[in-house]
Length: 352
Ligand code: KG4
Ligand code: ZN
Image 1 (cartoon, rainbow, N blue to C red):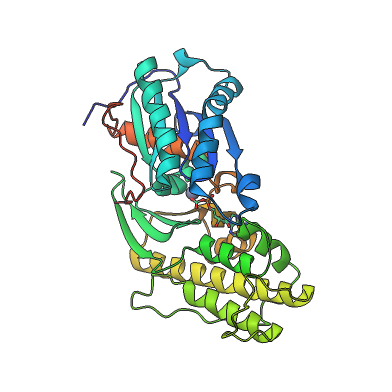
Image 2: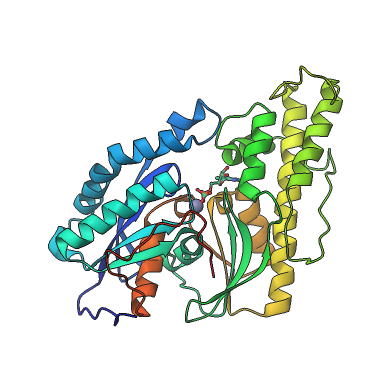
C-alpha cells in the first residue's frame, strides 16, 4: 500500500478507458466534477458486423487513444502540470483493447512522473454515481447492468464488495443485443429495442421469468429463447428447418409488441430483485449504473419502486472515462495506487 496523495487544490485525475469498443479519456476534479469527458465510439465500425470484433477494436484504440487524451486535456483547460494522477481501466474486458489503455497509461505515468491507479470497469459503473449531485453513502447497493455484466453488489466504505445476486448466463445488455439481432434491429441492441418498444403493447406476449435458487440472481438466456420461439411461431419457421434465418421480418406492430413485452420482462426482473436485495440488506444508498441503466423504462420503474435511488446520468451509463476517474479518486484516498510497472491488464478481473 502506498500513502494517499494529499493535494490542497482540487485533485485532477486524467482517466483512460478502452475495455471494449469505446476509447475514452476524461479529467475529473476531486472525484466529483467532470472537467472533460471525450468518447471516441467505434459503434459505426462494429455495427456492420452486428457486434464487437476484438481485433478491429484494438486497432481502432491504437489509432485514437493519444488524440482522445489530448482532447480531454484541452477541453478541461489543463496541461500535464495540473494532472495529479492517471487512472486506467485494467479489466474486465477484451484483452487486446485493455492492453492499449494500460500500456498508454503506464508509459504516460512513467514519462510524466504521475501516480497510477488501475480501476475495475464494473465497479466504476457503480461509482459513476459520485458524479451526480447526491454522492452515495455506504453500505451502497449497486445494480450494475451492462453488456457483459448484471449484478447486485453491496459496497462498504473500504470499497470491499459482496456480490449478492448476479446473472447465471447472459447479461441484461447481452440479452437486449441478441434479441435485437433476431428481430433484425441494429447494434447496439438496447437503444434499438427500446425505441420500437415505445409503440408496443407490453402485455401482448407474456414471456417467462426465470426462477432461481438464489432469488437475487438473474437469468436471461431462457427469455431470449422464448422470444426466438415466439418469433418462429409467428413467422411459421420450423425450429428444425436448416434454412433458419439469423433475423426475422415481422409486421411493425408485432415487432413493437414483442420488443415491449421483452423489455417489460427484463425491467420487471431487475426491479423485483433490487427491491428484494434492499429488504434483505437495508443499504444506506442504492445506485444504478451500466449501459442498460440508460434504459428509460428501467429508470422510470425503478425510481417509483425505489424512491431515493441514485441513477447515473444516461451519458455516463454507457462506457466512458469519467466513471474511471470517479472511482480512481476514491481508491487513491484509500491508498490504492500502483507503480506503473506493477499494473496488469486482466480480462476477467473480479469485482471482489
Ligand atoms: O456499459 P456498456 O456501455 O458496456 C459494457 O460494459 O458492456 O453497456 C453496453 C450495453 C449494450 O448491451 C447495450 O445494448 C446496452 O448496454 N444499452 C441499453 C441501452 N443503452 C445501452 N440497453 C437497454 N436500453 C438502453 N437504452
Ligand atoms: Zn461498461
